[in-house]
Length: 453
Image (cartoon, rainbow, N blue to C red; front, top):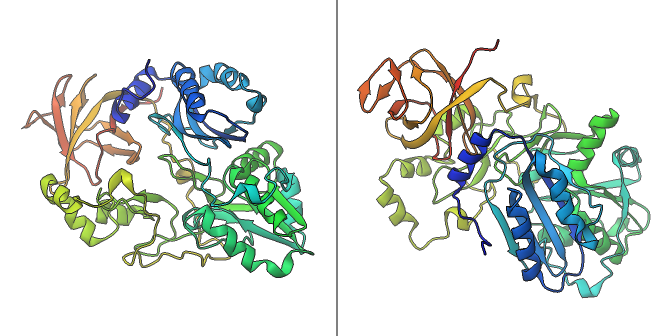
């Protein structure tokens, strides 16, 4: 019986594009006592794989933590798979602000010791004695109380691009680091202050609120459903957003815009910017903030050293990486001496700029038809290669290149080569090349933009 992925991310992305069906990005969690996490994991994989559900899910003796993408048409059937377990009956599914068909491209369900790495000994306190859950309006009201201290329980690279006004934003890389630091900082406020906490989807606050109540804090509150649910409520109820900027998310989008405010800088030039990227050097893979100008000049790299490396032959790159934790084995989170404008833990009190309205909704909405898929990118000459699978492409056509890392980029074809020869028009089966000012990946798709009727 199949209990693992059989398709690569590139193959899955192609199937999603060909299906042309809307997918929903959602997340949920539940604390519960699971006797056999391995058996539970296998049951979920069988049920969800049959529904074309994708995502990153952790299960443990203490519960489940899931971020997923499912076909919209399968939502009710997906809910039914959850209802089969008593502890997930009626569970809230936090839907993303901006759905993306490629948010997840594999179904990965892993058994872990904990569903969130908090570093806590759960036997030393009552994990069910949690803080008071607040909805968006209640949260906003308590924020206005001068007797309130609001704390961001996310990491530095998350809070840097977006946070609640006046929040304490610890300069930490992991959730487990933040707990003792915050406890130490707030020792003098246990009795008389409101401790108001939030995180992305609520799961970190579930454990943190119980921990801080055990530490002697009297008035502990948490944002129900985290920033994701807060955003849904303020939109539905037309409530003012006290959150400014972007909400960092853990899929290829790396962020959902909540307000037009830009509260962070490009780590390379200092320009107001809040777009995360991963260094194109697979031996680095550093997560950092990079503006479009630096992205083009540095070819998605965090430093000139990494820029030089990606221009080496692949065999030379592999030699440099040999024996090191690289690529998908390490996720470095935005701290490097080469990043001159990284302001970890020292965040501006006011927005640095406003996002352009066109950039707020980053997914380009156009009428398009699929032409083919990426095969290669020649970094030294900045030439992209695609295999034509459908339709025709001619000089003067507008195209859209889309992929999990590339995002969505439009351009006009001014020069075209088919099978190594210059041409005016290329057709099905042709291997085409043309210049591009940005690097592409093998998961990228090439579309022709069609005129709107």
